[in-house]
Image 1 (tube, one colour):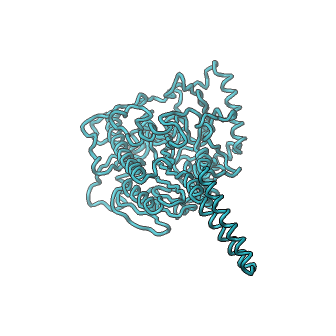
Image 2 (cartoon, rainbow, N blue to C red):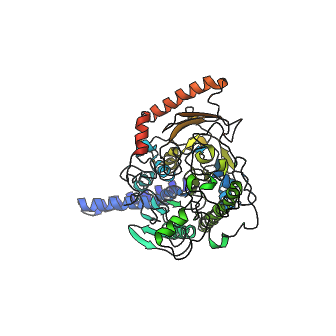
Image 3 (cartoon, helix red, strand yellow):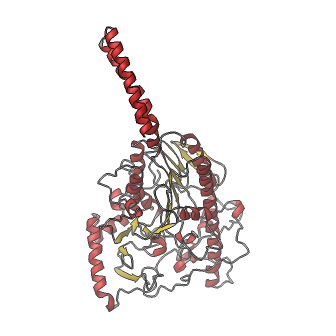
Length: 552
């Protein structure tokens, strides 16, 4: 710094001497004075620009990677029954070189509403996007964190799954799945590329990564920082693996979760009344081929047969119900984990590119899913419930310049906290209207004294899909209280320390009377704080309301 200052002083003195000489020997006019002043300013600026450019280059890049329905228990860094069979080495690398979060939760565990909450930092009742089925389109005129980054000098891009209906805003480039109601397809998908529909050949997970890397090659090497949202369709239903992984585990039986044969005792009207058990898989899920000479409608009806309890079927009528459930689970879980294998491979491609191009150290990399997922726990697939496997979001954050590697965080964090945190990483302030809070200070050992010790959840969609009763509740570090309310009035309490699998509803246990009273009061406080203290009839109206289709 001393050498630079000395050099600047020399240049300044030289410029002043030159100016005095010109002033004395020439007839000065305003244009001449302005010209010399500008020249001097440019000289001084040039002398200082290396430092300024260096400081500007330190604004971190951001790569935000989100898979659809990727359960934490399917990531080997989190631990689980699939660790040795289906490891995720590239996602694990992010955890080993960054921070693994153990208590990140979704505020409404379903695809579109979770994405809306992440973008806006607001609950569903504030951002207006409550549900997928008849949920309408996301209001793209409202504030989102990508738009804020774009306004503050970031290059922005979105590739992969959008699933919010309205056209994305705040992105210099986007290319998202446009077919099948914006769910997209695994093979030869269609994309909306900056407003134009294009068809691509290949496997969606690989293609989406190709688009991301192409954009990085064109936009990742300049002075401006970038924010890339890389959002995979996988491992969403119907779980179609890449060809090379199609038969990856055909010769082994996958392990079953401890609660696979849950009998729902004490929870018959809630957990026991759904269309998301193993029997509910249809023929398409099981990769069966329809008979020939069917019409398009006949084929569709045949493939989707089995979506509810009344239509459950067996591949072989000689099978027992239990044998059919186990056969369907084996098919499902192998396809699901094979889809994740491709996700992990492609994250490896991204890391390799960043490393080869000197971008790895100054790039914040986040990996997450839009919510959790049931992998046979309680005999289910899908999400929606406030139970742990659905509520918990995998969340990993790597930024070696700021955070110590190979650490964990146990603070209670929700998906409305992502937007303000990403903005603070970028040195940008979130507006007051955002309901979430940045947890950046937590990661630096300065957790605020008033950081929430519990989180509020609310799910609205009913009866499609999967017939999960709308419910709300709170979860703290040990206990969880849930109220199911649409056409039942059922409360559930779980002690996650003594009953981590949530099999024993304690709501009628007199030993917990005071705790239940306190938690019911707390949930009302949360609802009031987040401005969601409506009546049950008003909540039911939201479940019943047809907000429109996600696509026209």
